[in-house]
Structures are given as structure tokens and as C-alpha cells.
Image 1 (cartoon, rainbow, N blue to C red):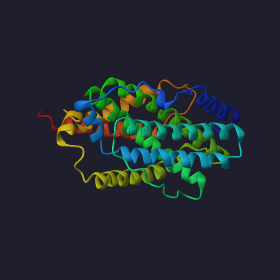
Image 2: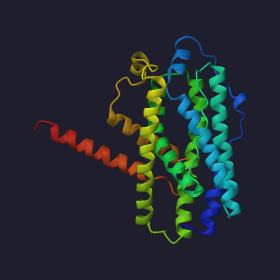
Image 3: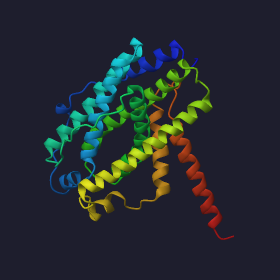
Image 4: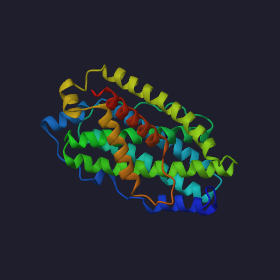
Amino acid sequence: MKIGSDEHRDLFCQHFQDTYTDYDPEALPWPALEGPDLERLRSVPFWQEVLYTERRAGAIVKAFAQSIDDPVVRRAVDLQGFEEARHAQLLRVMIRRYGIKVEELPLEAFNSDLEVAFKDFGFGECLDSFLGFGAFKLARQSQFLPEGMFAIFDTLMFEETRHIVFFINWMAWQAAREGRAAVWLRGLTSLRYYLRALGRLVGTVRRGQDVNDGRDFSATQADLFLEDFTFRQFLNDCYAENQRRMAAFDDKLLKPSFMPALADMALSTLRMWRFRRQPA
């Protein structure tokens, strides 16, 4: 299959629509939480940022969909916009149901160049998802919350994985249409956008610390979440979970490769460093 062809477009758009899951956030099997479980959920410091991000994502994707001239791609991107808005609604339901203190802030204006705004969002989602895979596994293994909550969030994780697979294929298809199909050119573009995404991620972390004054996520909660935590194990979990989740998608589709390659290089370096430190 030639990247950038109509066959490629039809495959990644149809696959995206075929894997759509229909659900109502209000009707999900939300578990009853009380005591320590409820306090742990309320203590997580980033719910406000996550809600803001999902609301803004929905606005960006919906706006970009209206600017697309290809009807096949437009339908798929419009569906993604609906799903991003549904993520925000799911978070609202959770916040209301469990009494989490969150302020719904007004959305900042995004880039007037809607394609650039969509690309910034897409690469940010690729970065967030790769790191999120590891964090999600870590939290689930530590039983930070009851399994019922993780089952609900797993639905979101699957949708985020669909989004980034769709985005990577759209990027390659769009680049080929513009005469930039060479792998090295796509790699340079990815590097540029990932650096921008990393800058935004750092800003998000800082805003979360400011909003919560660095105190809401207590040392007790963090110890439960990060017991036996090592950076190497976290990278291993990110890499392994990324491989596992990507395996669910059609092998003919492109998959995100930049973050897995970076993690693989970091893990190889850590293994070499550990080997060299061993006594002879």
C-alpha cells in the first residue's frame, strides 16, 4: 500500500470509524467510592488540567474538521472531535459524582492556522499517551483506585490509542499529498512538533503545581502510587504498554515510532551504564 494513496486514506479512516465505541458517560458503571479510595481520587492534582485539555481538544478538532476538503477524512476527524468532547463530559460526570473540586476555566484561543493547531494537539496526544500508558499501568498495579475506576479509564485509553494511530497515518498521508513523503522529512517534522509538545507538557505540570500549591497530592498518596518506582521501570512500562496497545490495530497502519524509539535508546543507555558500573 502506498502511503498517501486513496487506499491508505480509506484504510485509516474506515478503521477509525469501525473501532468506534458507543457509550453514554452518565450510564457507565461508576463504582461507589468512600473512605481512602474517595480521598485518593480527590487528591489527584491534575483533574482540572485534564478537563481543560479535553475541552480544548474537542474545540480544536471540531474546528479543524470543518476546514478539511476531503469528505472521507473530514468525517473521521469530525468523529474524533465528538469523542474528545465526550471525554470532557465523562470527566464532568466523574467530578460531579465524586465531589472533586475543579474550576472549569475559559478556553484560550488556539492557533488561527487550524492545521497547525491540529498537529500541535496530535503530537501532544502522542507524547501524553506514551507516558500515560506507563503511568496507567503503574497506578493499576498499585491498586491506587478500585478496578472499576480503571475499567472506565481503560475505555479512554483505548480511544486515545485510536486517536494517535489515526493521527500518525493522517500526518503521513498529508505529507505525501504535499510532496514530503520521505521518511527523514517526516522524522524532522515529528522532532519539531514533539519538542513543542514537551514544552507544553512542562507548562501543564507547572500550572498543576500552582493550582494545587504543591500540597494536594500528599506524600502518603504518592508513596502508594510510586512504591518501588524507578525511572527505568517506568520507561519499560511505557514501552511495553505501547507495544501491547498498538498490537490491537491493523498491521497495515502506521504506528507512532518516535517515542518508542527514544525510550528504546534510553533503556539501552541505562542498561549499558549499569553494566559498566558492575565490578569486574
